[in-house]
Image (cartoon, rainbow, N blue to C red; front, side):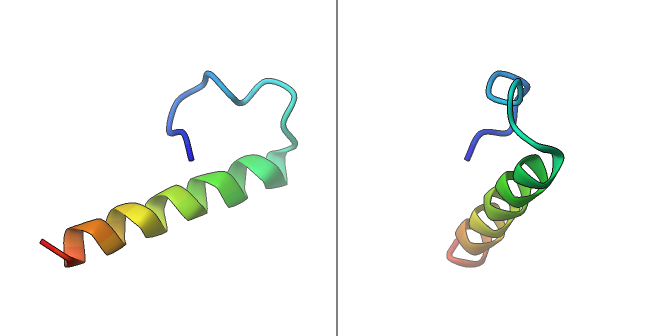
Length: 34
C-alpha cells in the first residue's frame, strides 16, 4: 500500500479506497503488536 498521491493516477476511486483500507489495517496491526 502507499499513502501518498504517487500511485493514484489511473486508479479507480474504489481501488483507492481499497488500497487505503488495506494500508490502515496494516498500520493498526503494527500498532497492536507494539
